[in-house]
Image 1: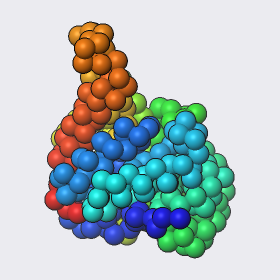
Image 2: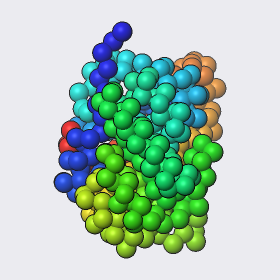
Image 3: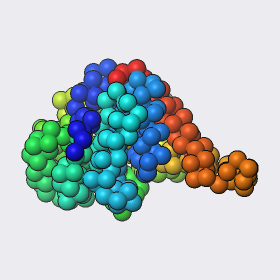
Length: 293
């Protein structure tokens, strides 16, 4: 059994909170994603969080396979920057399975439960995570849109509930401030910075998480970071970049070039993988995490 190269997120997000930048959390969907994420982080000397939803875990053949794949790729690529493997929007059972499999960080999303139950279950996940030296992210106020069947309307988090949650021993808090998953509609009202300010003031400087990082205007991203956002999740934007580059490869009929074996899956997927890396570096540049490893 190989030794895990993964770290939990505590040191990286605490440093980001103090330094007024944010760590990029990039969701992975397959081997190409893992390689692109790690390549982007290593080439820019940036700490990185690889996020995986439970749906993506199932697609990639289970928690253990994801852990082994990330560790093995890190070893093969000689990755030296801090890397955390984080369960994104995990259920109670999913968080337990992720920790047992070797994830170095988990998000338990109890936002759909009554608050008292959310607190109770979060405490239980925290106690288990301590056994594995793993970090925990909790959520108050559901994030808009859909994430693997978890649907939120994008309501604003209750500040008092955020305050209570921040005292439980979590490393990060995701709180609804008007953000949504996926592509933002044209009538989106924008982030509610007053609520964010109130949450930041009431939670004793705990690193805050911004979900739905795709499509938020750059000025709002920077302001959110200045107010305490220390981790920003990006998924849809990488998927769109991958799809666009792959579509261009096929529309250019590169896959029909038999002389160059353009049909080879490795060549077919290469433009998309490069597009993912480019997108990630753009995001890390915006978030201010370049060179912070």
